[in-house]
Image (tube, rainbow, N blue to C red; front, side, top):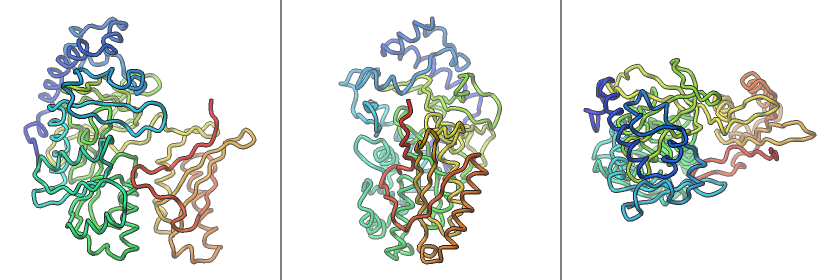
Length: 435
């Protein structure tokens, strides 16, 4: 099923032609209307007429999250505030929030992108979508809401929080599709189990994003909620949810290439990565946004692109699950460690008596980095003997050492002792005072 078949199944040559045409217009538009880009292009000796197609994209300077803070709040808008009909902002924890603005046309484009991902998982007008992403300045709630509304689906705009009421609402209102963060989906599943109502849920699918999650976590969600769990990708700086989406084949996320251009670069050399299936940093350019266009934005997300045609018929290139972030990478005793590596090991062992709830704590003692991982036990293991608990802890330590290349201390803790999140999970606490 497609929402825009003519675009989603467009021949590759036509996609590149369309991207080139839009890019040429967007670069001129940005140069004329956004001081930051104009100054940066002038400093690089680049004029809009030098960009004759996507083959010239590499000539343009990069843009960074720091730009959004430096020009806070409206300095990167390409339209006057009188043309901006909606404003969103990141949920950043440090410094100024990043602020983006949307014109009416931008909102229409955004709704089209999220409508595509709903159609791709089989959503029809008979479906009821419970949007448990946060509404407000966060893009998650509104992004899914607009797409569902455009399709004529029934939307439950419940936002996040009040977990037992969420589950009661799912049952009473007959929700068939759930949209939230994957960590919150697991919390909902855990709570539904405690309430003894999993079998009363009518859910058939879930759309999960806004934080990294592994294939093991997908299996957990699917098994506990009896649904198919689909991955999506988006970020506030580009548009919000809807940049890329999985279809029913669950083999990578289709990038909406008629609206966004993706580059993969080496985060160290900044050179483009041409080899297939090689991990690199994702760099996005918007090619038809009006309120907040952005050129060659370094996301810091690491991923792999798949270029072969999908069985679903869509010709858009596909993005793997992000492999972590170049700026979230932990350097522990000189070793690069990604939280996703730890999560994958832990979730592979959930059937052995642990749950998907964990926390990573990094500290420094006597000038040496320490890595502590706290993992909740399942109730049946908690009731078991201490020898079994110690044996599992040792197995996890050995497996983590094999994957990470360094030692970690694993502590199995009581059920429900790690704080739950109703939005993005806080998995990593780095207590080191790093300069």
